[in-house]
Image (cartoon, rainbow, N blue to C red):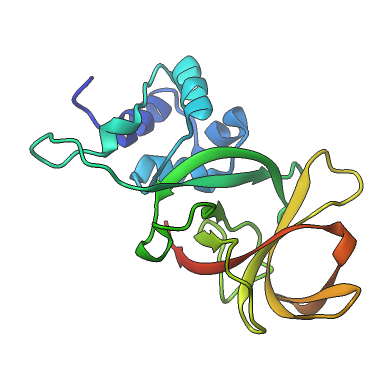
Length: 207
């Protein structure tokens, strides 16, 4: 159905196969939140993920399809890459492999930031500030101040890629970054030599 928007085609393909969003997410190697976002049209798969969806479900996605006004004229919109994949068997860790696994329209404050990106919230460690399934928008160029929320990416033993966490930034000394998880409330120390990147969160959105 070439005139049917991708979100509706994707949702209908899942429903025809009697699959849940969780089952589709497992088949694609993404989070259930990503599937829900694609079905709602709030975000869209990356080109490699779109090819995987087409192979598995016969649904084709083209970036130009959601960059059209009602009268069909194409418009340009800045889109941010959505980074990170669920760590198997872990409710909170986000595996960051350097690839984009989806895309979402940039909020106004990030339209001119070259390295801006987004990531899905996983787990409940940051409730009540952030909830599973939210998308948070990241500005790596903005240095965090104490009290800001950040997405911090680190090297951890036993993981094939860098691992990301959402935390509140408390400060830093010569050896550690001092971070805070909210649920339960606990301090999280990150050694400076383990740091890959720290990006300040500048906004968020629910499904």
